[in-house]
Figure 1 (cartoon, one colour):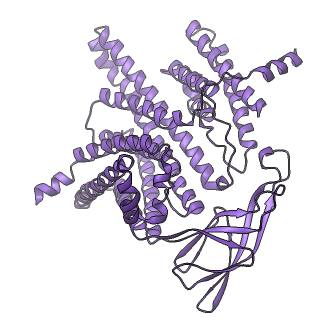
Figure 2: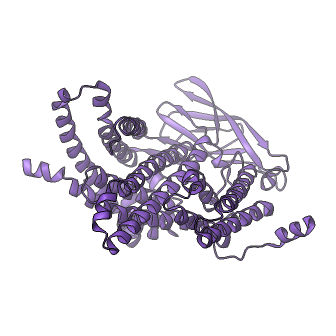
Figure 3: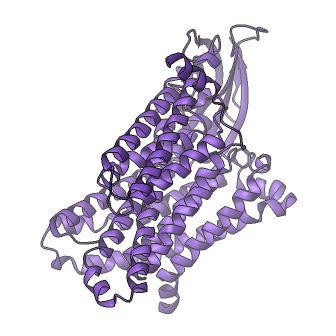
Length: 278
Length: 269
């Protein structure tokens, strides 16, 4: 278990390092940036593979914070790899999420027998992918807002008009695309939770865990978002703000409850391992 | 009448109700955390009995639940009116669709909307009319009568696999898999059924779920083998699961339509 945690510390360290290189070198040393990020993602993958290995066939409890950075990284691999618009923002999000997992771990809970079903794993994974999609949508929306502000702030009204068809709808469409995917995965997660709950306890809603309410609140929020988007009831700016707010809401409602109390990371095993190697 | 119908189907009402639901559920989360014991009996007692006992006794903790009820009712009515209007308009305009598949796929959103209503009705029926025996303990070779029925149940055998290995350290010598064989007698007919965790069975409108069992551990104090069952007669179950299936079908249709339009025309939907 400690080796798994150490791998995650390594992943978080490389995420931070790649962010630092990305910010300081601004376009230079892109290969170095890519390598650091790739090492981080790989260490994260090993870490969560270990977590799954040591709980399979049961579901790893309260471990979403360790899985989320990797899922975001994998879903946005192309964007990050090519350093497209919003890339650094997403790397920054990876760092913040992984830091939250490092300093507020909640992985002390043992898996329970009732989670031995396909539906519990589907509930877990679809939930993580759903959360990742909502956060990515929020990041794209933030880029959209920033681009709008930068251009209007510089008084480049004409440029703004010209670029509207090129850049902004692109980010807007990306935002709505990620929200649609997020909604689909979130729905699958909720329905698999419903089936799991019925199989295990005979009722589609189990009131033992208050998190069911925040999951429902997230679903209703994005239902509202999609209604406003599909009915074309608002402009792109408002939609972008709503997507950013949705991402924040997702973090507060679904990511935050999975975090534990503040704890300094125990790096002794990692240092011992490094000393042995060196 | 037309005005009321129009107001009930307004998209603005949808938005307001959805946002109120988000706020209500957020409040509910704050209220439910730490007071789960108030809501736990809801599944066993049913809605009416729960309201008259726990609901009334702890109004500070349950007010969000009543608000949720009202808001979900409003959402269901709004969804029904709005969707029905749009379905009629779509059918009226069917001549404008050259492609049959596209016309069919246009119903995806409406299928999801109707499915949501079916799910909500299913939940309501379940909470109003479901009968639950929440903790029926049966010892090995013991023959018991299921309360409220003429069905007898006998625990014939219980087969527990104990984990042996290094990978799952926390599970060593502890139960990792359980199967119990039951013999059910109703109207002088005997039926054998097997039950496990997350592996219920159905018999004469009743569903049987394994709640607990013993012995859970190989070491330590040895307990007499028994199982604890949740036995439920839930008339809403078929409704909410069929709603779930319809919703997923609608969702798949919507995603397909989305891809179809985006890849062929670059349209934003």
